[in-house]
Image (cartoon, rainbow, N blue to C red; front, side, top):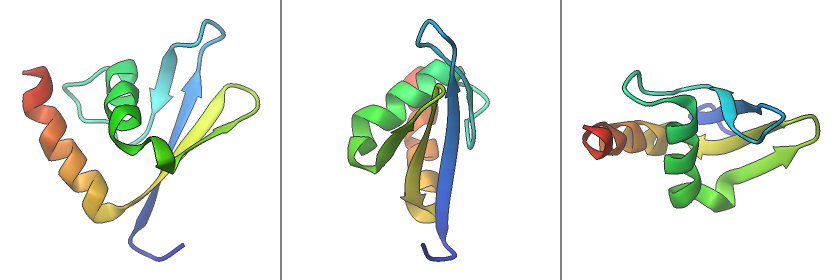
Length: 74
């Protein structure tokens, strides 16, 4: 993975909702940010055991997604 890549870590609650996710815009809940990323970057998502997962994305993509997400929830 190159230096300009970002790994967005997330953790699920036992009921399947997202309780923690990195790189989250302050206007979004953890679940909203996960839903937003998943609908746009499903091929970049990897699920792990124990209620965890990651998105592996280039920094430029993460920055663009954050900018796009801001008006989506306003």
